[in-house]
Amino acid sequence: MNNIFHLYIVKIHKHTFGRNDASEINYSCKNILNEIIEQNNLSKDSIFNYSSLFKKSKLKEEDKDVFIQSVYVLAHINVKFLEQRFHYLDSAGCWEEMDLENIFQSYKENEFYNPITHEKINEKKFNDIVLPYFCPTEELISLLKGVRQ
Amino acid sequence: MNSLETIELKEKAIKSIKYLKARQAGFKDFNVLMKANGLSASVGMDSVINKISKLDEEIDKKTIKKLAVAIDDYLKRHIMFASKRIYIYKLNKSQLLNIKSGFHCGDYFSDRLEKGNEESFDITLPENKIKKTSLKISLSKTLEVFYIKGLREYINKESMPSLIDEIDDNDVREVIDVFKVIRNKITVFDFIALDLKNEALILGLDLESSFIRAEMNKSYARLYDIFKNHFNITNVDPMDLRPCIEKMEQEKTGNILKHKFSTDNGGYSHTSGSTSKKLDTRSDKFYINGEKNSILDYYGTIKRYSLQKNEEPIISIEMSYREYAKSAFSKIDYAVITDVKTEKGFQFCIDKIFQHA
Image (tube, rainbow over all chains, first blue to last red; front, side, top):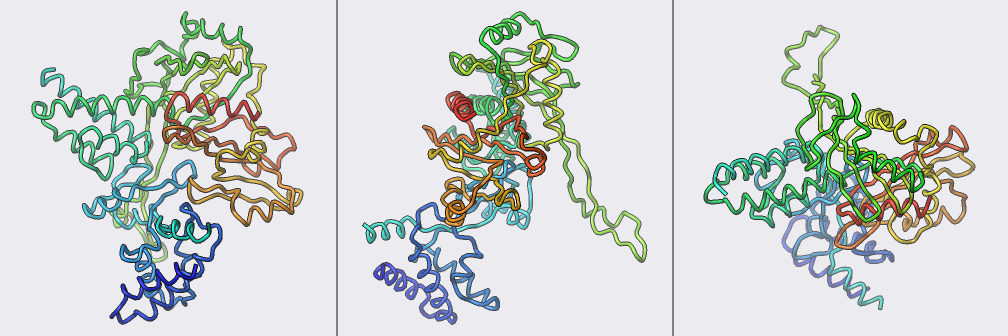
């Protein structure tokens, strides 16, 4: 476990090196790492929303910017601790996964649709309907699997 | 194929996508299908329509043909399986066979049911409320489905901020929003299914998730009215599906997406759900600990099963807390089946309900 923790800490430090907010981000990332790695039922289907990550970060509300940056760092391709995904509540009341490519393309083309009614909507409305969440990366899960076996 | 035929094919494909859009079909699978048949990735149904309408009748003839076939098949499956509310009536084999021959002989036509296009799903919007017969499909050797074309309406509200200034206000009142209320009409394909294996008649309503409950209840009453005397079901109640709930909770396979139960002799009620179709609400530590120490009385469940080829049908059987609390014997008349893609998946859901009822 320790090794996994250090592996990610090193990646995070490398990634945030030279930034003004590096120490705050490292602090919050470390807290999040700790809690998630120690969670014993972690699987590739585990889900974290912003609120749960914020609690794990041990930051205060005035550190909102640091928190957002920390989450970006953890999900960054250089760190690969978390993976960002998107879903929406369908009309049957279940959460439906959105295709990531589709979301990137929507932003690129600045063209957004309501995933249920297919009506054209603006970015703000789209962000109200399609919500982000985070899950552990496959890399993290396979590292943890190796340790636990 | 000449270019006139290609133009027709293109128009039909666009019409079908517009109908899929109105049916609120999911875009994810559809996008994959369009990509597999020659289009680049799109962001929404409208952009698929745009791309198809820009295809050249001569140069892109092959692509148009491929797309048209794929869209046709996708639409057919959506009509056959997507989001169905079903009511089950226990009838014996001979009663079912009688009903079957009644359909074949055209015994059920009246001022409320006319003969329609029985060769394909005709999606043109009906001009009136008279229902029409449509395709008859054998989903398996023992499950025959007669689709009935009809019309259903839903209302939605859209905010019109640009009209705010046009409305009078005064010093103490300020108009802060204006809505337009729109009545949408849509072609639906309800169905009558004859299940010889489970010995049951099934009344099915199309597009449960797109309509409010009252509209669906009204549609059920209409469909029931057409057939009740013919089928001799006036004295038979739909099968009570409430017993399924607890058994589905106990059954290990599949995952519960949402369930409702009360604790402490009805003192508290809980609704809990997973925020992903992959998770099982029963694996939530909070639930596991709570369940150990209390007696739970379930009154609703939404459960997903994993079948072959990425087919993951969802069966919902639930009632509101009000219905549950009203009586010790409150019944659940119908189940909702969603995310079915194949004949096998449909049969599976029906069999599953019978297994637990």
